[in-house]
Image 1: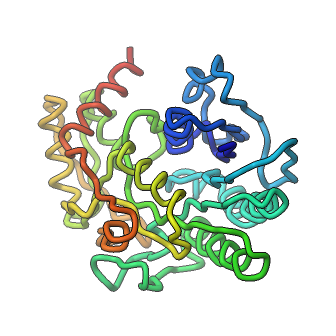
Image 2: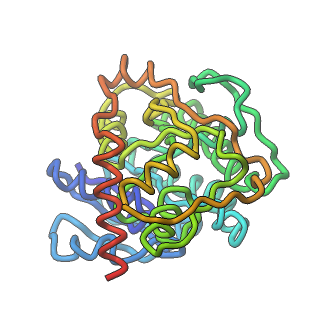
Length: 310
């Protein structure tokens, strides 16, 4: 297949491009590099099956030739980004999704939207199934991301129902691995880099809030299976193994061997208290569940950030 990946120079987009190329597909990667980085795809530049376009997907997307699929992964994805570039976050979720769907419609290509567990907000249902509508604050600091993704889902369904575009929607839960930005503000790179620098590890609130962590190769496998499936409704992909933030911080301390202490800071506004996917649908429809243990995944991620530090 010939497949477009928007956000191809980002953390998830670059790993997805790797998987698609390994499966024998041709990939056209598009990114404006606002949060992505060319080092994430530098190893692909000599690959004849890979083409890169430096382009903002909120503008019209033109490509020659046929396409089989468009995978829309372009979006800032960390709380620091939401605060620094909230309008760009909203635009890529709204205008970018519209342009990517327009490309799919014009080329009669399958469309896959990278949505997020953030559509569930601070959930009142636990774990979160796809049937849960969420508890989202549209005017809070996270609203620009949460509502951009909720709008993107609505736009995707509208194109499916009105234009007959074949669509897939993946709701991605906390994912980690090599190529994350060291300074993106998310818990995994933040704690690892603090530990490697010998700095105190920052835990927000009392650390009793829970998260679940999926290694990037497992996530990409779920996305690839979803792309090839006939599952058109939203599908959670993530690791249901839940732990508290304090437990996670202690795990980072142990695996890095740091002597760093743990310091507590005020909980950010609208920070979810619980986050765990119900993956019953992914198991039933995709035959998917995560395989990489937290320890193995973190070891690879710690090695990556250690290498970045030189």
